[in-house]
Amino acid sequence: MNREALDQWIARLLAKDRRAAAKIISWVEDGLDREYIMSSILKTIKNNLVVGITGPPGAGKSSLVEALTILYRAKNERVGIVAVDPSSPYSGGAILGDRIRMQAHGTDRDVFIRSLGTRGHLGGVTRSTLDILHILECAGYERLLLETVGVGQSELEIMQMSDTVVVVLNPGTGDGIQAIKAGIMEVADIFVINKADLPGSDRMKNDIEMMLNLSCDGKSWRPPVVMTSVVNNTGLETLLAKIEDHQTYLLESGQRIERHKERLRLEVWRQWEDKTLAVFNMAWEAAKGKLMDCDYENPYELTHNLWKECFKEDKGDEG
Image 1: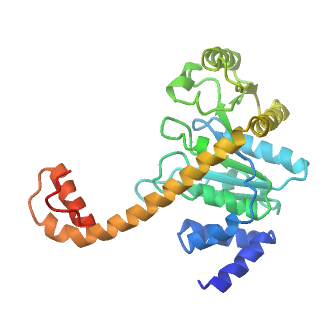
Image 2 (image 1 turned 90 degrees about the horizontal axis):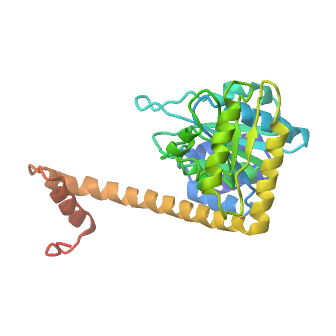
């Protein structure tokens, strides 16, 4: 697409045009003029605070996102939601369930829901997640909510993409010690025990509090543990207040600046990855013909020779 047409779409985005937001998100996901689009958009945003919602499958993340959206809309705030669903390793497709679960907001012009497939990317998010959050902010959505696939040792990128990370757990799926096994003690800024009307919720809360006593000694922010039930509509206002408390803490302590520096590092690293991969793919196609004709049984030797061929290293250099 020519730059004049792109500029017109970006101007529509700045004017809070929902269709422009949807179009531009699709182009960025597909890598069409991504660098030009994002460079134009990033000049206009203030980096609004992002709330990340994560936790194991079935914990009630989507229900909590919907409940928070209702509370924000009651304050007349516009809400942008990015929800990531796992992609099939076979077809590459994904069941974008949040479009089904959040039908109540489907006609609300001040709520934008974008469901994404991971497309094989680990980390509980997608490679374009940060860009989409920036696009939604540019479109005038003040409250940004990010819901991930699920949390575990490989899904910690949400820490780098969100300012406030809410980890959702529920009783009946093991004791609180599972939180340590999943590696989420380091992730959470706020713990939520959802479905707190079920048996075992008090015990889980006590287990998490006990672990926090051991891990948060001397830290300036101790993650609160909030009990919620979307069914009974309890604890949701408390959760909203704790999110606001944490965001106030980020601003007053200077931690927001540190998190944004880390986010910038992540974005630069991903750009380097993309550019390096593109260069390597071209070099691989050019070099593999003559090198792969040989019967290589040693992948280290093949890697070494391909590297030298791709980047034209001195053949006598064995380093």
